[in-house]
Image (cartoon, rainbow, N blue to C red; front, side, top):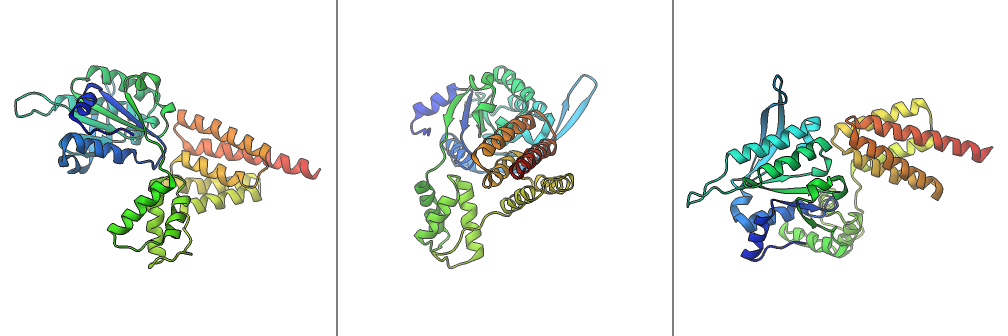
Length: 337
């Protein structure tokens, strides 16, 4: 964990053009970034506005493209997720930094300052975008500072990582999550039984965001809270569990077509493809022997890697399911032969 308590620490940060916060989802990376911005700039960093912005970018000498992207900004920083632009992400990264360099803030003494650009989910950027980011980082190092946020540091190119100050944000422990839940309950004037709080903390699997959402779901389901109250699983998880059950029940082209439609529904409702892979593997593995579990995990890793290189998530998820169906059916036939 990185803390900036003294002026010396803030000056140290200003010497680095970029800082890379990385750690598992729900570990509090964005909250830590917001605390850092508040330490540097004061309460003004919290006064943000959200807007849909359109950039007109010269892709080539003869062709222009338009990219729409949601931004959250204050007078001191801009936060964007370039991976939302899909294959156009490399244009977004370069254009945003160039725009920030052209509109540098001026302090009371007339000196040109800098803004901070926060790039979320930078591990989901294409290789072209990351190479473009590296070049732009070097060119505009005096005009702005970068804060990169990533779940997996391994998906960030070494050329980018080497130009950043890395800060690992570990997943919170169950007792840490319980403290946060008690704090939330106190501010919302809720009475939270210790037994239920522990249940929610265990259910969250060291994901603070998941814990807060689970507590909110428990509040909607029943209040006053009961110690014996169960923690509700999210709808999309139940949906994937149902898909896994259908795959295990029947392996046929007809069932594969049905499952494809269900995967489409998940993708349309903004469930990340990587999360679909992980959750589907979990529910499929619950009814497999150790040998088959290793194979399923290997296939999932292989197809997920291909997904990172491609653009159509449904193709790679469907290929994984087809591979599983074929092997699982062969195993069933051999067992009864």
